[in-house]
Amino acid sequence: GAVVSQHPSWVICKSGTSVKIECRSLDFQATTMFWYRQFPKQSLMLMATSNEGSKATYEQGVEKDKFLINHASLTLSTLTVTSAHPEDSSFYICSVGAVYTDTQYFGPGTRLTVL
Amino acid sequence: GESVGLHLPTLSVQEGDNSIINCAYSNSASDYFIWYKQESGKGPQFIIDIRSNMDKRQGQRVTVLLNKTVKHLSLQIAATQPGDSAVYFCAENIGDAGNMLTFGGGTRLMVKP
Image (cartoon, each protein chain N blue to C red):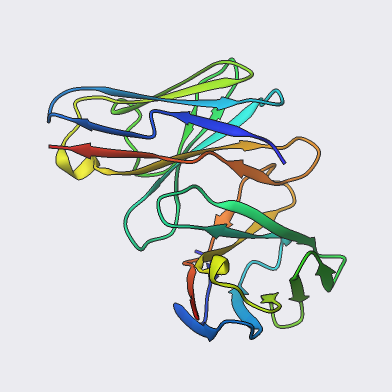
């Protein structure tokens, strides 16, 4: 399977600041990456689909101006949480779509805590 | 809307016993299914997958069964070990949706020593 990294693994920030999370596909070129959010004891909620070289596709109810996604290369997608508030505290996970199957391979996740 | 769901939120088994985790899906157009394991504080880890043209697939200590008639998916873990303790998610993919997956609610597996 694909090897996916995320950075940082955890971050604590003050309310009102912006936080950038990086997702890297380490062993193959990913034209499609996905961003999920997961609250404690809940399933994964898809936030957006990140397409290399084009705008991300956001799921209903996800504010595109708050959660900025950039997929500038085939190995890197970034999620920026702008003007973060305590309710944005969550576990953010990215995944890459494998072109040879319909599988997604996930990164280790980033724990965001907004004070 | 259509979704993937699970029968049991928590499953507790004795070490060495076999575990069976179930998943019901409602989208008849789904043709690819995946089981993921998620340990606390980590991202989901791919375990095993199965396509709709199969009804059984085996891996190392794991078997996935697919019953398309009743839209039911199960994950069997043989000789369950403490390291198997985690939350298990099933996910489904619709053939024309690329890599898009719909996740079930998850089942927590607790292995008692």
